[in-house]
Image (tube, rainbow over all chains, first blue to last red; front, side):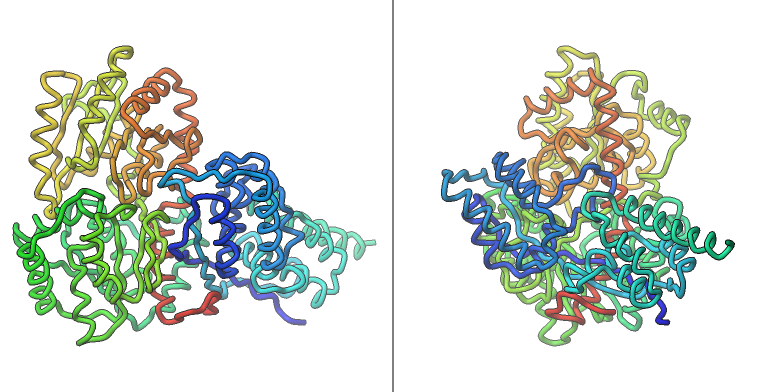
Length: 220
Length: 407
């Protein structure tokens, strides 16, 4: 039975030097930037604003609504269900489609100097932590100790950036421990609408409930 | 000096563990920091705190200073002002002073670093040495680069493009450059003398020593005496507030070796303050961290009405102390303050005065801003995050072009 090794991930931000003053320039930028830019602007808030609840879902939405003042388009961008776009190219296409639709019907508003949207790229560094698990009890113990960045890596980075079909926890539970029910419950969690600490608590609770069920069944 | 273990109660053990794991990847590499002053200003302050912590993590970090005479620092101050947008042109003789001082220093420095980490424009031309010695070179820009005076920018660009990477503190400072540009904000050290918890007794003793009434509502701006910090605008805003609320103003700051203009500005501020007994203009010596800490903690509202600002660490310091802050929306300040959520962003003297009155009259709202600001600084602007970013930057030099680096 393969051991689960907790990795973690930290990122370094790089400025592209590209910026947008209006929706047309935002659209042009979105078409040309690498995927690492789309990834950063739609995911960094998950780690950066732990205490904010509810959180700003993505930078494009925030800039359009709060800086450009385009409330409706801002809401449409806010409301993109990121769980439905595990592939960054499809997510890029969705954002582009919303901007194109907006441009067909609206005049161009340009922000004043200093309020531009700056395209930023994220470089990920993945490295092993000191924690590992061979069973549910060890898994939940380790999960309580790892940083939120480790949790982030196994839930988000694995699927969105590295293109795996399922988060690492569910995959290990399914393939190594044959815990399909628990794996499904974790996969169904909506990770984008809770803080990382909240997500950690939810997963720990699910695993602990499952341990309790197993213990109860064994006692009978 | 605090040890990494001392930070655990604030940062959590996982953060420290991860720093050690990253630092391991730099075994055998030497990081050579070079700047122009060991005291005064944010750069020296950060390096003074960071180098011992890097050593504890096992990273061979060193720190060298360039030497320069008065003429050199007059040129670099003018260059600094030009990079902040002032229409200052450098004469051929000034350029000659700048280049020859850099050249002399290049000949004197013991080039021990595998990674040469140059801070700010003063030593930027040392990169000419690269042709001879190789190594990895990074230029760290700590200043507001959003609208530099074009001729001076063009002059510096010739040097910047010789580096492997540049580091800026805010997205607005990015330029179209052929080299990598990392975004790394500076940080504060929560355990430094300037930021550690103080008892009420310690705070009162500083107020007493500086002859300031601790009971009166207090507006404070801590910064070097520099036109770009707009101390005159602060006094004007205070005078507007004073019409309605009995309060006092503290303008306190030190000088830096590489800032020859400071004394002149200080004299002009004294003149502007006139004989108002409630304006306290304090020129503090370099070892005044405890006093600054106490002044910030004992203030009602903190101001940072800068016209340009590389980052504005005084804001992070104030927010860490849960103080409401009214600051200009320039440079790196909007990274620290979300308007009406974790502080107040203003654009004018009138706007600054308006919000100062609001905050003095609404202490609950003011406290909410301070509390939110504290959380934001805790999450994003402490020295641990800064060290982590630097470690990643150094490691990334050995993984060029990779978007996901497996260590």
